Length: 63
Image (spheres, rainbow, N blue to C red):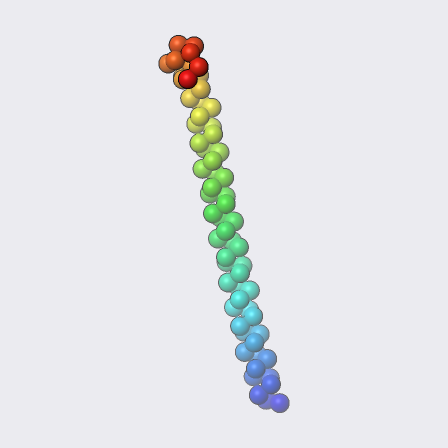
């Protein structure tokens, strides 16, 4: 009976470690996606700022 309890406790510890690893993995993935979205938004905003300047540089010719 003591052996079964030890196995159960070891299994619970392993499951807890896996849960924590999955949690950190999910957090890391979310942070990466947030950074990617931030970069994409920043690039898009910068291009919007440049549009009037590009129109002036191209003298009305579509660039």
